[in-house]
Amino acid sequence: MKNLLSKKPVVIAGPCAVESRKQILGIAKNLHKMGVKVMRTQLWKPRSSPDSFQGVGTDGLPWLKEIKKKFRMKLCCEVVDPIQIEQTKGIIDVLWVGSRNMQNFELLKALNEDSRPVILKRGFISTIDEWIASAKYIGKDKVIMCERGIRTGADSTRFTLDINTALVIKHDHKIPIIIDPSHSAGRSDLVPHLACAAMASGVDGLVIEVHNQPSKALSDAKQQLTLKAFANLFIKLKTLS
Ligand code: PEP
Ligand code: MN
Image (cartoon, rainbow, N blue to C red):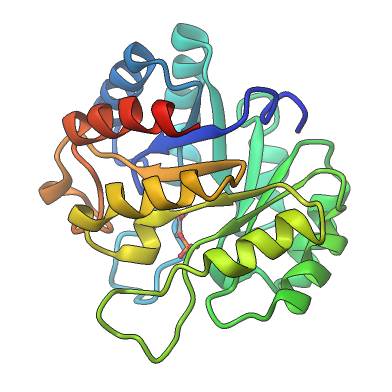
């Protein structure tokens, strides 16, 4: 984890999901050129509907190997089953627990056995105590918390970004915290504004969805930034950190 957050704040970027070799290598090449050091490369997608795209799974592992070799970026990937912890060894640097699995305790216990850092997203209706209890299952010394928006009475956006709790995690609990403005907003036009607000609040980093052709994305098409929009935001973020 020290490695991942050695140059704070970290900006993790990449598509919602790995869709094909061409898609993920193309995005990696562009992000690398911009100076992005850590990429989100999700192979398994826990989706609300069984009819939605579920991810490419292990078929994508060779593509990620290629990215690591070519661009030397650190890769993060959500795991939804303990078996994937073993399958991603040597390729994925940072494991990740999605919002819907924050209280999947068997998964959390299995992650405790692995030495890699783990990003733990907040369940979208979870309290801070529940979130911290989940972090303890993984191991507080290697966990990075991720606030991704919660469900509230405010329904004008997909979720409500709870920067308050993010700051309590950082200042009272001294656990590293990053913010995901993409899932919180649910719409790409608001993402740069939320990203800047989060960065200015002093959190340890951000995770932002970026796609080569957002309108054609197989998941979360409305909230992914184009490469150009992300490039502009990335420059702005550097002035805030
Ligand atoms: C994600 O970041 O890939 C994701 C699915 O988000 P969340 O788990 O926060 O819904
Ligand atoms: Mn997504």
